[in-house]
Length: 137
Image (cartoon, rainbow, N blue to C red):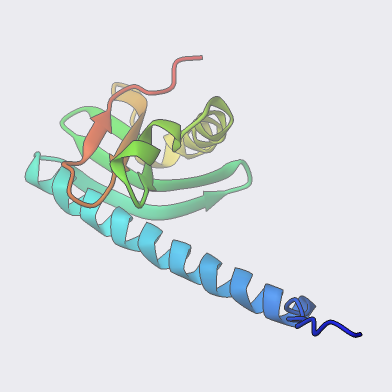
């Protein structure tokens, strides 16, 4: 007596890669939307956006913004739920943004400007959460 066993083959390597690429593209698109929203929100708060998505050998800064004599290098994190926001940023990521900010300071800040690294956290249905001076070595 043979039992009928149905076997569903697992996705092959190319299907897995395809799914990862789609997920990555969706995450990238959500990140870009979040950066645009954060830039808009900062402008409403009186900031001037100096640059976006600035790459350096040390890492990337999502937004560079100025308000008076303060220049902020800003990491924007977008998550699907508000509950995920508490885990969106860690010391390693902040250190990378701080290293990139140090690299960019001469370009965007003058000798009398104050400089800081901020984080803006975004999730659907919530107000943007702006963490000022998030990195203090």
